[in-house]
Amino acid sequence: MISHIITPEQCATCRLCCQFTRASQWETPSLSSKQENSLRERGIPLMRREDGSATLALRYSAEEAEDTCAPCPLLDPGRGCVLPRAERPIECRIWPLRLMRREDGSLCIALYRNCPAICDEKAREDLIREATGPLLPFLQRMEEEIPAAVRPLHPAYDVIWTAGAGSSKK
Ligand code: SF4
Ligand code: SF4
Image 1 (cartoon, helix red, strand yellow):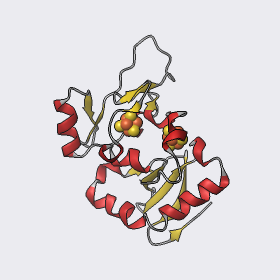
Image 2 (image 1 turned 90 degrees about the horizontal axis):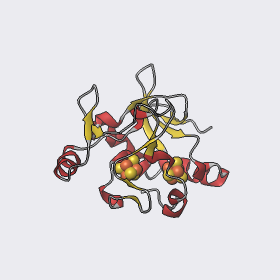
Image 3 (image 1 turned 60 degrees about the horizontal axis):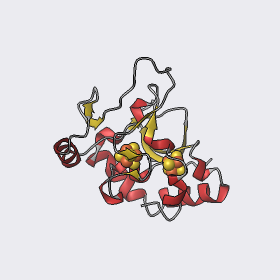
């Protein structure tokens, strides 16, 4: 979906968004019911969020430090994500973009600022242009189609578009 801007090769050397500390567990991707059923049949550990949506379960050992990362159960250390790109949860396919909700209830598109692939200014600009242009109708439809994928706005994200206000490029 955005692999012409952030390449699989860049992600292969990073994998930051496939590992989670206890504090960032909220970032694990929401699963559609089809994905949930398919992963459950394969014995992949899943869990439910408070809102009832399904996500991937992480395993932390009690002895590990609070900020230790646990990998997504679908992350193979050598090959990366074991799912074909088209079958990955939607949040994984659009990362480092996220559909988020501001405190005032407005919907926005936000960009995770610590993704190494967008440290480059041109890549960041290209991604913002894509998200607020060709990809925008798709991202807007997500609110209705996958409501659990809309997360509260978090300080690690920069808002690049707000519903009703348009682009708010930083
Ligand atoms: S943080 Fe960015 S570069 Fe790293 S794996 Fe995720 S999308 Fe790829
Ligand atoms: S489903 Fe795949 S892309 Fe998404 S967090 Fe897990 S390993 Fe990463």
